[in-house]
Every structure is written in C-alpha cells, then in structure tokens.
Length: 221
Ligand code: SAH
Image (cartoon, rainbow, N blue to C red; front, top):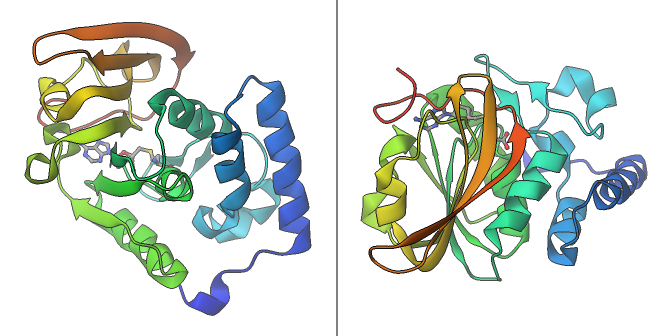
C-alpha cells in the first residue's frame, strides 16, 4: 500500500457519517469515540473487492480465516476503555488494523500484537502509508507485552476461554481490561475488569458478542 492508495472520497465520508449516526442510535454515547469512528476511513483496512460493504455495520471476513470487527463492536469496546488522549493502550489481535486505527484517532499511544504474520504485515503497510505512529508486535498476545507494561487499558479483540492473569498484572492501578470471554469458541460475553488496587479487581459482565477465538498459550489451543 502506498500513500496514493489512501483514498477517501466524499461518498466514503457521507457513508461514514451515516454509519456514525447509526452507532449513536445503537447506544454509543461518547462523542470522543464517535469522532474517532468518523475520522477513520474503514476502506483502508477492508478487503478491496468488497468496498460496497465497507460502511455496513457488520463484521467481514479478511484473510487467514479472521475478521475485521463490526464498527459497533469497535466503538463499544473503545467506549468501555474510557481512555483520554495520551493513554497507553495495548490491543490483542491487530487483524485488519481497524480497531488500532480508531485507538490512534482517540489520541492513544497504541501497542498491538498479532500472531498471524501476513495480517500484521498488511496492517503495518497501511499505518506506514498513513504516517501513523503505532507499535506492532508479532507473537502470542495472551502473554501481553511485559516489556512495555503497565498500560492504562488493554483491549482483546478475540474471544478468550477465560481471563489471562497476564493482562491484569500488566494494567496500571485504575486501568481497564475489555475482553470477550466465553466457554464456546463462537459466543462470548463482553467483560470489563478494572484494576482497583494491586490485589483487587472489579468485574462487569456486559453484552453478548461473537469474536473469532483467541489462540495461544492462555487462549484456545
Ligand atoms: N482488531 C481486529 C479484529 C481482528 S479479529 C480488527 O479491528 O480488525 C482477531 C484477531 O486476533 C485475528 O487477526 C487473530 O489472528 C488474532 N489473534 C488470535 N489469537 C491471538 C493471539 N494469541 N495473539 C495475537 N493475536 C491473536
């Protein structure tokens, strides 16, 4: 991908505005999140041959059996993180790079881990063309990123069988982990876990959701 491939026409912008209205109607209230959703051209992260679907509020298959998350889900998870500009955020599962781009648009300092190398390469080329500052890592995201911890927030964009302890230990006090958890690979509940102190957490169990499985040593085998 080159800089000249980063096209964002008036038609894209109009469709994106309508999508943002739809997200507002579906319950996304944070103006900061809605502005970030409005600022990121989803077509840059979306399969080229299916551009007519880019501003539908739906997940869509990308390469290697993975998906680009549904815009509502990206907005919902981002809103749950409750971050301010300058927050240090870890994302697990870079995939297309779309969620990471929304976090950058929120003014966050973004670290993202992906274990399928070709996906990471494609996303990395888009960020390079955009001139965005993001730190991308290849590896097993269930281990977090101990060398760069602690984080203000961690967002997991794949469904976990349980909450890996690694994430709690890599949060700052007051930090938040947003993670889909379920005992089925294709059905989860969104959970938000706040690290209240070194030894205490607060857990909120939220909406039903559907993510591709989180693989790796503390994920699905
Ligand atoms: N955030 C992405 C969603 C991608 S789907 C987006 O906005 O498009 C989830 C991603 O998690 C997939 O790309 C999958 O390869 C990745 N993944 C699954 N298990 C992982 C692990 N243990 N470490 C890192 N990435 C993982």
